[in-house]
Structure formats: structure tokens, C-alpha cells
Image (cartoon, rainbow, N blue to C red; front, side, top):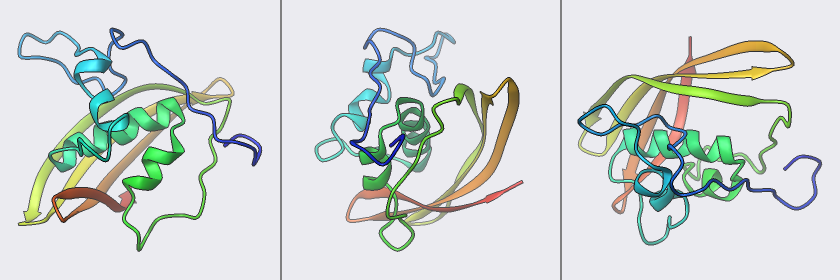
Length: 145
């Protein structure tokens, strides 16, 4: 939400490369419709199957300014009451450094997200923690580097 008014969600053409940067076995970027769109647009019917997919879809939701999806995939114990997006931020890419299970229903994903704001490049490096409850993965929190 830019100014406390109605939430704004940006849209992406389904055939455009997915913002999360996932590629197929040949290294070709996956189309948005074949990647994160199925989770972001259909959270109730199609939850992300693993923590890395959830991390990627959450990055895509940040790019799209989709507060509803981000709130829905944030663990209830840690979920903020609201989200604000920086209108000047331009997301540049996501790199997954490591994704690993830490237990039967827990996982961690280390990533670097890059964006530009006010002409300045910003690098967000975080190890995020996830938990699976009733078959759904949720973002819990993260440690920034």
C-alpha cells in the first residue's frame, strides 16, 4: 500500500519471464504463468510445494506489490499488521544461495535480492526460516547479513 489507501497489485503478462529468475533444465527462464503465478494467484488451491518455491513466489509478490499474498504466506505469529511498498524501488533479481530442510516441517533458504531505489543499488542478503503447517509452507522470519 502506497499511502494507506486501497492495496495496489501490479500485474505481469503470463508469458513474461518470472521475476524470481527460475529457469528450466536448459537454462531458459520460466514464464511467469509456468512458475510463481500459480502460487501467487491461487494460494488457496495451489500452495507452494516447498520452502524455496515459497521464497521465490514471495519475491515475485514483492515485485508485484501483492500484500495479500505476502500476508497469507507469512506465519501468523510473525505476520505484520500491514505492509508498505516503496514506490521508488525497482526489483532487479533474486539469487538463491542455498535451500535446505532443517527438519520434517522446517526449512531455511538463503537468498540475495537486488533492487534499486533512488539511483542506489541495494542488496538484501537473508537466511529465511520457513515452517510447514497443515501442508502449507509459511515464512517465519529471517536473519540479514
